[in-house]
Amino acid sequence: MLASLKSRWHRSFAELDSLATKYAPVILCGLLAATTFQKLSLILHTDGGGDLLGADIPKSMMLIAGQNPYSSNPWASPYPPLLLATVGSIIRVTSGNIMLTPDTIGLISRNVRMAGVLADAIVALLIFLTLRTRSFSGLSALVPSAVFLALPSISLSPYFWFNNDVLGYPILAGSVLALVRGRYFVGSVLLAVGAIFKIHPILAIPLLFVWLVRRRGTLKSLPNIITTGSILLLGLVVPAILPGYLGSVLGFNLSSGFGGGTSSFTMMNLLYAIFPAVFRFSLPTVVENQVWLAVTAVLFVIVLGIVWSRARELNPVDVVALGLLTWLIPLRQIYTHYLVWAIVPFLMRGKLRQTLVVGSLLEFANTMSSWSWDLPPDPFPVLATAYGFFATSIVYLSVSLTALVFIVKEVGVRRRQDSRGADSAVLERYPMPMIRSS
Image 1 (cartoon, rainbow, N blue to C red):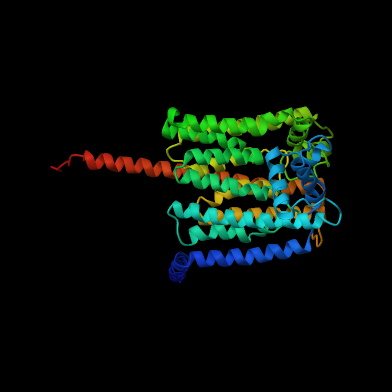
Image 2 (cartoon, helix red, strand yellow):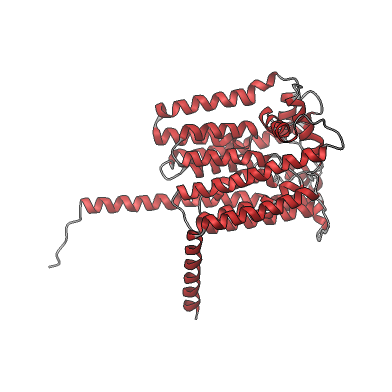
């Protein structure tokens, strides 16, 4: 009975996979059309949230008007200039020289979010192209793009509360596609651009350098290193001449327990809320920062060792994903749109079951976060407390750790396969002498 069901399942899956291979472009276009319509409907009935209306749009318009966006209200502009310049450019192209008023800000918000819809479509196409470049077909090539387009935590949440990260995902996806195609200079440059747009890919860059040096040698990798370093210098360091830049960007990105552990879904809530509530003591911010730096450094050294010793088994998709996970796992503030930076390269790995597992965990974490913000209907009001936020933080952590385990485990599988292949080659070349029995 079980054998018969299993056989039917395999036949059904094979037929479905064959259909996905044959009609992949049509199915993908259909998904793009359906999800685009869904997002546009949401955009027409929402305003994009307070962060977009009260911070991102005004600060971006200040920058394109030649003013210093970091000169006042530093918590409203904790981004590198490239992000603000990108949003400002979208506003200029889609809305012209429109003045920011209570009557026009809704129109500006709509136009910015519609640009985000286009960015999502580009990312889905880049995921599909990357997988096809890596010789994946059928469901393995189609489902990851479908997950990115249709999973509510990725496709809808960022438009209800708009997050500019949506505009950075195409840069990251384009970088990975270039690396997969062997265009390492273009790939490393785009990765650097992604880091000066939003700092999350910053640790993927040194890991990529190590991987390139191990695979191609130092001399061939030197132009990539010099160019990428220059981009990071210009995009992250040089803007320090702007008054308020360091206080704005570093002040936000250094640990902050404001909200009593009810502002984001980081494991640092252990220090922000749980320790003070249970053990009646709290740590100074400088100590919290030291804890974060120490955990990040330890995790980075471990991953760096994996990339150095396993460069032969790793591909650039894995390297970029490892760098993003290393940054995000101990991060002081975590939201769904932050995790999607790591989900994008993870989807490009072409592992169908792993994609579904990690996608399900992300959706569960995002649903819990909605309950934690006490949005109606809220079946679990306790999640709006510090303990509820910490429980949600654990689920968010499980997303990153599961993705990390999948990648590391896959590296070990490839190493064993390569070892068996090498042993077989040796035996074919130097066969063992036969021993006759007496």
